[in-house]
Structures are given as C-alpha cells and as structure tokens.
Image (tube, rainbow, N blue to C red; front, top):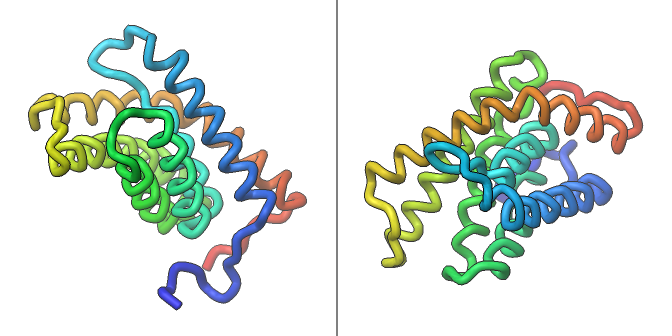
Length: 180
C-alpha cells in the first residue's frame, strides 16, 4: 500500500521474534550495565547499534517494526513521554534498512550506516526532547554526545554485524537474499 515492502519482501515471523528478543536484551543491558559505565564523552547506545545492524540485514520493514516495538518497550521502562523512543527507533530502523542491498556488497556500508544511525538516533532523541520541552542538553552537548555515540558504534560494529549476519542466515535456513 505505501511501498514499504516490495512484493517479494514479507516479514518472517522467526526474524521478528528474534529481533525483538535481541533488542529487549539490549534494552536490559543498556539500562543495567552500559548506563553505569564511565565511558569518556558519553555512552554507547546498544539498542540503536543493534537495531541498525538488524535493519541493515533484514530490510526496512523489519527495521521499522522492530524499532517501534523496541522503542515502545524502552518508553515503558522510562519516565519520558510515551512514544518518543518508539518514533526515533522506527524511523532509524526504516532508514537504515533502505541500505540493505548495498550492505551485502561492501564492508564500508555497514560501518557508515550503523555509525550514522547512532549519530542520527542520538540527535533524534535530543530533538524530540527539545520539541516536547524536556531538553536536558544544549545543541552543542547533543552534537558532542551524538559524535561520541557514533564512534562507539563504529568500534562495536565489526564485532556485532558479522554475528548478526550469521544468525540471520541460520534463521533463514542458510539462504542468502538476492540483491534487487
């Protein structure tokens, strides 16, 4: 209807469940472990990195759905406006998923897409909190935190992306998707 999925693209139930479970575990790790780490300059957003990697492997439809569900779970576990994280993660999941075909042909695309998603997601959080009147950061602070989150995402991507790619292929029964 809206052109999100082509006629050959459908949601695979096992992939959706696996993505939501992984993102839920990432949310728990984000809140309980990563938030308490004293990383210089800011912190890694594990949910954004994982969502971007999943969307890059599975495509925009699964990226948007998984981003929305994971964002809604994150919103329910926080004290900010309900739907704020769901909106940002849904948009990031869809946008990164659009680069799915290019990711299979290049090593640079996953690094750029996941690092860029981390930067844009962090700026998206800052923008939505500012629009809703809950801004805790100035514009310069938000940009600095976004860049630091992007650097942390770039450091994590070479380890995380191949594991997720192998897991996706295993879920799909060893089949590779044909590039469009």
